[in-house]
Structures are given as C-alpha cells and as structure tokens.
Length: 437
Image (tube, rainbow, N blue to C red; front, side, top):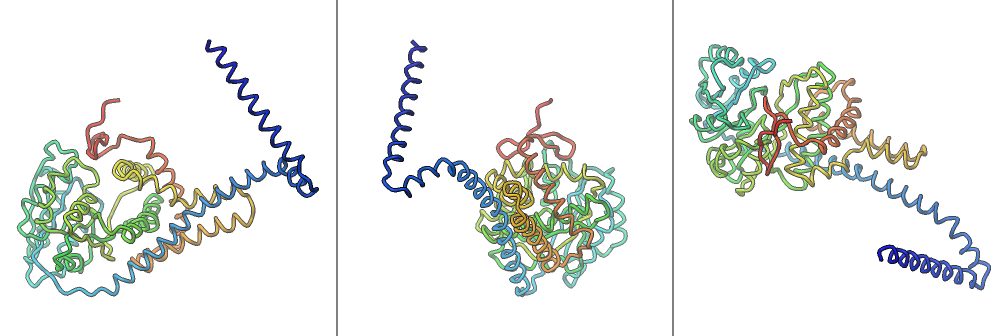
C-alpha cells in the first residue's frame, strides 16, 4: 500500500508539471506580435543570470550594513565627547572609601597602588581611605601594599582578609567584605591593576552630587604596548570595544559599569541586595551598573581615562580572555551577541569582493572599510580620549578585526570557561562548576 501511494503521488506530480509547462508554452506561442514572442524567447536565457545577479546584489546589501554601524559609531562618539567637554560640574568632595580587591601581584603593582595615595582631594589627608582585601597574608601583593603604607603614612590605608568561601567569583567575595569594612557612604571600586592621575578621585565622584545619579564609570586604556598582543589589545579597546560602548550609550543609555572604576554608594549597593547577590555571577561590574539602573538611577559614563597594566606577553594569553568575555556575552545578551555579525566590516568587505570581484566593488568596500575604521580610531583614541597612538599600532586594527571575528565565531562552540583556577559553565546567568571531561 505505501508503494502504491508513492507511485500515485509521483504520477500526479509529473502530470501537474506537464500541465504547467504546456500552459506556459501555450501562452508563449499564442503571442500575436513578434516583440511578445521575443520577450518570451529571452525568458529562459536570462532567468538564470537574473537569479545570480539578485544573489550578488543581496550580498552587497548585507555587506553594506557594517558601514551603517560605522556611521552610527562616528555620530555617537562625536556627540558623546563634545557633550562631555561642555559639561561643568560643581565641586563635590564627600568622604570616600576606595575599595581594592587584590589577588596576586600585577605588573608594577606598587606604582598602581601609590597613584591612589597621591590624590588631590579634600582639604584633609583623611578625606578618603583605601581598603585592600586579600585572601591571606601570604598573597604575593602583600609586600607592595606594606610598602605603600610605609611610604604614605598620612593616608588612611587598611587591609582586610577574606577567603572566597566557595563563591565562584573571588573578586565579588572580596567586595562583600570591603563594603562591610568601608567607613564612608561613597564608594570607589577599582581593580588592582589600575593607575590614576591626581585629579581622578575629584573627577569621578563629582557626578554623584546629583541625587539622580546612582553610579559613575569611566574609560580605561592599557598602559603596556611592548608585545604584539598588548598592541592588539590596545587597538581593540579603542577601535572596537569602545565603539560598541558609545553606540550603546547613544541607543539605550549606560546600563553597565567597568571594573576599573565603579563609583556609587552603600545605599545603591544595598538596593539590589548587596554584592552577595553577585558572588556566583560573571561580569559583576556590568551587572552592578545594570542593577543600579533598574532602581531608577542614572549611570554616568565619563570621558575620563585611567590606565591599566595588563600582562599579555603572547597572543595565547590574550585570546582566551577575550573569548571568555564573548562566551559570557552570548549567554547574557544572546541577540546582542548575534548582532555583532553585522559589525564585522573586514569579513563583509571580503565577502562583497568575492561575490562581485571587480575593482569598483573592491575600492568601495575595502577602501571604505579602511577609511571608516581609521576615522573611528582617530575620533575615539586621539580626539576623544587623547591617547597616543604610534604609526606601528594603527595598521593593527585590521589584524584585530580579523582576530575579533575569529573570537566571535569561536564563542558559538564554547560553553565552558576558565575563571581564575576553576572550570565553569553558565547556567541561568550563574557560574556553576563544569562537569569533568
């Protein structure tokens, strides 16, 4: 019975196909004029090429989408930095607690820590305190902190010790203890590898003088550019990461913060349940900003830059960290992660040239890509953040864009991630131990 049904179905389809062909031929040869017959005779000749042309045009249209994104980046960056330079804020210098979670010894750790002791802030030396948190007194960073305490006796500097207590995010476990130990309402959270200028504290605390502002964050730029990996990281931050940040500011406002600088108050932290709520979550800095925004307070991004001293001797050190962040983004913002496909200009420019290999297309897409990316780097790095860039670093933006595309593709095939010394996977936005291989 199944055999007979298949046979009947095939016969019906063949018969219907014959009817359609005969009907089309009848119309074609029933044409009364020579012009009409010529049109029908050309139909079969051009139908194939038309399909190919349509496919090529569709590819060229898709390949133009990164240019729309680049224009939006240029507009957002111009508007952001121009507005920032016009803003004048009244002086606001409340007592501040600077919280420093520390694990291990970062490059040039002493200079990083000492820069926070040289702040031009307040009229009294005790206008702010610095509180470090380490896992134990044998942490490699302990001698550097003790040296800072000895070199700056006028500053109020304290050390607290706290183990992670089973929390996946060791940094957040330390922030729980730091927030409890802080003596002041206003808090400045800063990673251990950050170095700042003397006007830092006065600059980042000022927006909190507005009661509608719940948190403040600012840009950061890598300090070391000795290795190829460090130069790639620098150009990636300035041309790619901050480009997306400025577009987010333009379209949706600031709903995040950076771990290099997060300025807020104990009250705002308590408003989302305290840092304990983030102990097993990745991207705690981003979540801190989001949870403060959800309370109805503004999170402000300042056109101010601190420096970080990150150590990337090889590409093998840079790639896993960027991949980890991309995997986290895929789980936390899946549609935003997928949308990154249409921001990769180097990929789409090559696709456009392969689909339509002409000099005109190559000039428009590849030349346009290079011009747009160079304009973005100059606008954000040199004009906006006033960061020095040497001639050897600028061409690396193409290499970074290729690497960033490879990282984005790789993130679809990675569910587990390395976090400190452990292997974890993300489940419902939380870090859980990964099953053994």
